[in-house]
Image (cartoon, rainbow, N blue to C red; front, top):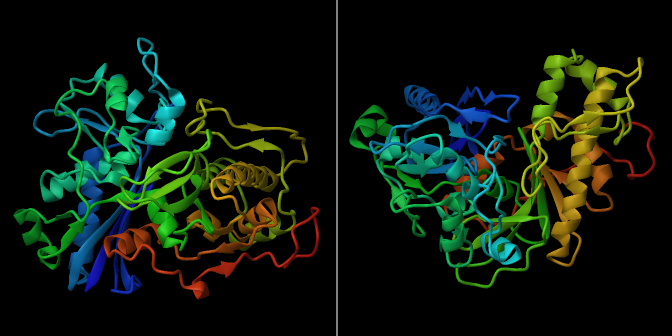
Length: 464
């Protein structure tokens, strides 16, 4: 049996076919870039119907190439925190708010949770603009919405009919009781939730099927079972082989995050959660604890667009002349803070610029700034397991930059730091969860050391 893995990301939508060992089949990949609408007011939105059209194009491409033969299971990794208002007929009433949108703020006529710490421990979140507790009232004041869904529920609803929301996606809304796996009454009150406005929650083992019109369009998927989507961060941990408290994943794609997975079945007591960290669900049996940042590979995209960086080997050579941790002092929060921080978009800064400062030094400073954010929060994560952890780097941005991998190794020393070069860790992780193989041990042969063979220490030293 082959597996179709869908990755519903912020910057792209991808579909790839894996074999039963979750190894990608040669050439069986379709990808469409997405246009994220951003604005100086903090907007960060996607067009829902346009996103669905791109997903359909990917599936058309895979079907036409014969890649959907023998697919028995569809697994989905999808962005957390997105929300889309729908009318009574299920049509969008506006764009999809993504995690990057910083415009919603908690309503001034509400006082917040009665016990903020208890709320944080119970939901893994805060009363914050990133979550539906603040987003639903903000949207309701602007649209006559009948109900609200995430991006995953919208696109899957179009293909499968009405679909429930997975506990993983629900945990990213900030409305879920992570222990009882029900909508949290206080969170729903803060969000002003009314009857029928939220999706039903998917039970463990939920499976869906294509609507007849799409089964005819993609006959290779006519008999395939569709699994409940999991959050992209959780999927990245699983795809990186970071599925227990001994190993944390640092993922740098469009944004960046550091996360640790623990087994905590539904109904079991949750481990204490430090004030700075969030916690979501991987599935009914596992939680993921961590911190996320608005900037990652998007910093390189900005620098490449605005600073006329050298290309290819020339850029790599220029970075190699700088030590890990080099570059100008920088605050990389161009897109503002992810929760619990409240800094708005436009908080990023560069300091100490001179007429001799180069574009490469600016890029290196931004990369180093992300490393410093991760190092600080990794120490918080380790406090929850009382031991240092190994670290596995993953995601397209660090895979593309050997210098950034060395910078992370220096910032996270003395912890062992490895690198998972699989460019599709999210899709792979989603497939492993859908197959019930989340806890399979990672193959150590595919997690390599970082490129830096030097002992992390003072700046400088010979190149590897």
